[in-house]
Length: 159
Image (cartoon, rainbow, N blue to C red; front, top):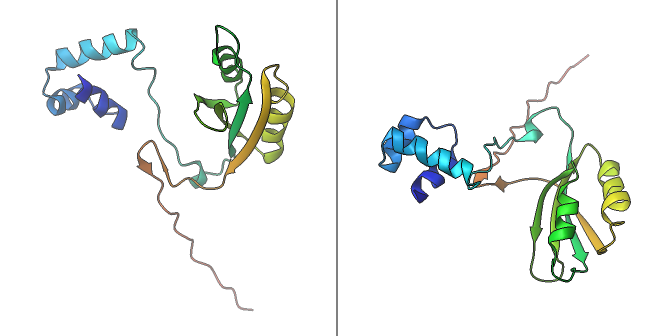
């Protein structure tokens, strides 16, 4: 069954027939396993990885280090839950090391990201500090390599 999960993670557009063949299962076994994985929240969703730099959409992505005062009996869970409720937040991870949480957010502009950090994140009761890092370029994400964008040929106009 781990093989099926690996196949789905690498390409969730594979047909049930393809998955069955590649995993050494029947189509019925694949369908039953997928339903069980979805019911048990092992599979949380299906998603395409988009290279937004190849589109006309302007966006800024930031990685924010967050220092937190853990709560007795709840640790970091309560504050992490408050943070991941914001629409801007794409991911939240509990970390080891110099800070407690990593928060990944996206916004249309640097100003929008700065507003989120200054007005929403840093003002939370248990947050004791933040450090924001802007992602300048993605090279690889979820095992997928972002291809270098070909430079368009320059047109020269002589008058």
